[in-house]
Length: 127
Image (cartoon, rainbow, N blue to C red):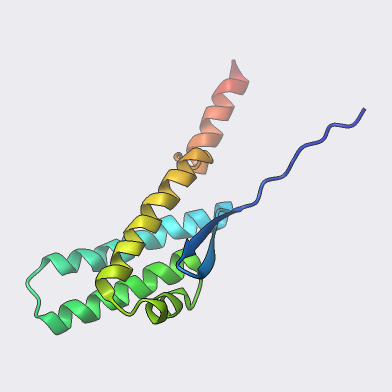
């Protein structure tokens, strides 16, 4: 008797206009994403302070570049900005991607850290 188990892809496909990307959901990649996402969020929070228009543009563009490249791979921001050269639109896309990725990660069981999962497993084994 053979037990067949279908493997699952460790990516979330993402389409933005005519561009196709993949968000890597391997354990290492998700951990790296969550660590670096806080840095990007901190940069975006600077936009809530009093800045002139040029500073706002520079900070927003830099943060979005880091965020897109973190989620979708190096060069992703340049491709997206080339397709849609408007920071407000690119920022809107980023929010949609971040929300969508977080939902998909939760569906895949990434809502808890690996440490928490291991702890729950060990508790079950002890019983």
